[in-house]
Every structure is written in C-alpha cells, then in structure tokens.
Length: 195
Image (cartoon, rainbow, N blue to C red; front, top):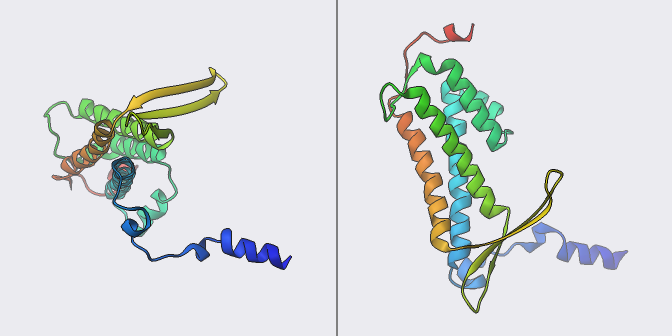
C-alpha cells in the first residue's frame, strides 16, 4: 500500500506537479497553433464576461447579486438570458445602435453573431487539430455519434489565419457589445417595467 501511495502522490496529485520554470524553458518559444487556440479561448472568455457584465447592468442589481445570477450559467444560457432581459427591459434604456430605426433587427443579428462565436469556438476547441509535420498542413478532426445521424467523422483542412479570424471575430463581437452599451442610460424609472 505504501508503494501505491508514493506513486499516487508523485504522479497523480496536481499539487506535486508545481514548477516555476518559464514557458520557454519548458517547451521553447510559443508555437503558432497553440498560441492561436489560446487566443480563441481567451477571447471567448472575454465575451462571456462581457455578457455577464451587461446582464448585470440591464438588471440594475449590485455586482455580487448579478454574479450570483450569472456565475453558473453556460454561455448559451447567458445569451438566452441577455436576450430575454433585453426584450423585456430594452425599451427602458438608451443604447448606441449603429443603425437608427432598425434596433430590433440589429439586436437579432447581434444574437446570431453571439451564437456564431460559440459555434466557431467549439469547432476548434472541441476538435483535434493535427499538424502534418511533413506538409505543415493542419487538419481538424471531429468524430460525433448522435441519434439523428449515427457516427460521423469529419476531417477538414484549417490554417492559422482561419483560426486567427475566429479569435478576431470573437473579440470584434465583444467590441460590438461595448459599442452598443457606450451610450447606455436608463430612460424610465427603475422597477416600473418589471410589473
């Protein structure tokens, strides 16, 4: 039993894997594939945070109360909550729409873009990206098994610029939301619209 405990402590306990060696000392300079996947992930985190912050702002609640509401929500549920609150309370606030007199249509397009961000992120982060070291080409491999279609295997070529486009698109949608809320102010008394 002592041998098992020693092995587990050494190999299976995360806290025993602590090392302060820098990234470059461990693996060398950052490789473009890993860097761009990291950008997609971090930009998507920023988008999730932006949605959470705007939900809190629309609800007009204290930050910690808003965090209680948003902390455990999936991205899809954050988008749904953001949309539902906007449709219920949006007329109570002033926003900075990029196109006048088409506010509802614009918001529907923004929701489509928010869903596209998740689709693109999942396309990369929930797939295996394989690099052919001879040809330098990247292939995205995805295997699914759903009741509707059975086993499906997808192999498609991807490249670093395409993945950068995903990262940039996601951060562009963050900026779109920031712009929408740049002129944000209440135009009706609080809580009147909740009745």
